[in-house]
Image (cartoon, helix red, strand yellow):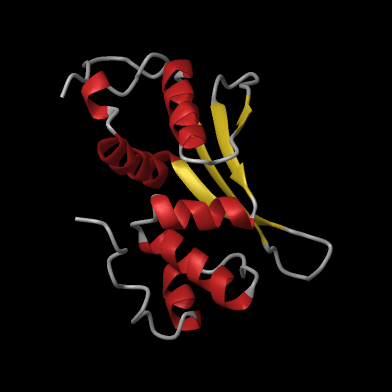
Length: 153
């Protein structure tokens, strides 16, 4: 696939032949599951966190630029937090519109993120410190949650 071996923390990139839209979306979905997170910030409106944020971290400036460029081409508003002492960039998407766009174009594959999203979508907020089992209970037993997202092979 064109991936190099050895130490590549600061130099890894996606090979040119993998930059085609559908392939890149699959790679991005996997990167998110490995190095990303969905979390919710508090707003002044309610007790529970309700403002969605998606974040992917990487130490490779080349990979960060590839992800940023791709996401912007897909209509996302991307914020890059520059590394401080730990040399890790943070690629951030914030707000309901960005999460909705993510779900329309990229989606989640792990129960961890699907259940977080499902709770937020149905309740309008997220309940912190819940494990997957509890989130499945909150989602109504998980019957809808366990279905594979549309468009995934």
